[in-house]
Image (tube, rainbow, N blue to C red; front, side, top):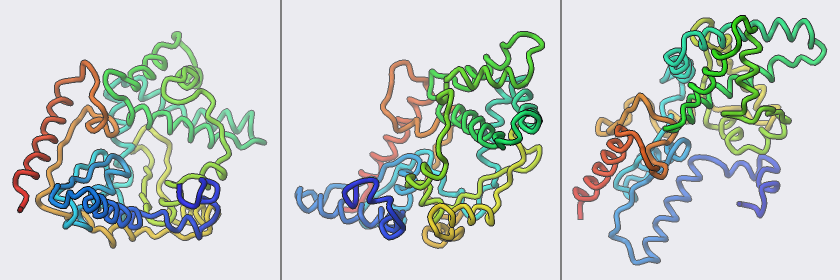
Length: 309
């Protein structure tokens, strides 16, 4: 950990300022050069590999330091979710599709639950203004179920079985509460100090400085309640947290936009989970996942065999 401890590293913007994608890439470049020199491995090819944010770094490393790597494998790397290249609702449209394809009744119950939460909160808990934290938790629950359902686990199916399996005539909120309290995806009671956790989060700092992903959704676009991305509100939140103003166009300025390269190979799957193709293999994996891993392996071997001497 830089500066000796997490507390020191996250103390203020003077130390947090070193936490950026460009700094990480420069560090990787120097590390690889030094390692190859110290190990007498100057002729060994290097392929960048990463998933999620690490996948973004792998992609960008290949773009910015093409003389150091011969290729990159990026898994679940949302490099096009900037500057409105991708529709703002793209992520949650897919989450909604996953739930609806699993169970139409489950999807409808979730859609109905938001207004019911607002009604109950306004009637019984107005003094606590508590509905938003609950809705944020449920949104995270559903998104996590879609994102992290590694086979053979079916997190969406498990949640929907609980929601649909409630006794006939059960109230909407009773069904939702049963699923939330099951602890299948997230801890049953995920309560925390928002400001403390965000201020100690490296990703929060990066989203407030360079990784501005305009994720949101309008009315009736998803199973979630109307929540469009608002740059003004996002900016106010970042200024409150860190005293910084976001740069919404920085990533596309630094790394490019939609047409990055005509030679990029995209391996697409309708059944995958977050970074599933680069995690350690497990017994009884589905055939499509085995085939995708083998395809990635052959592409990497091909890069090594065709590289110039």
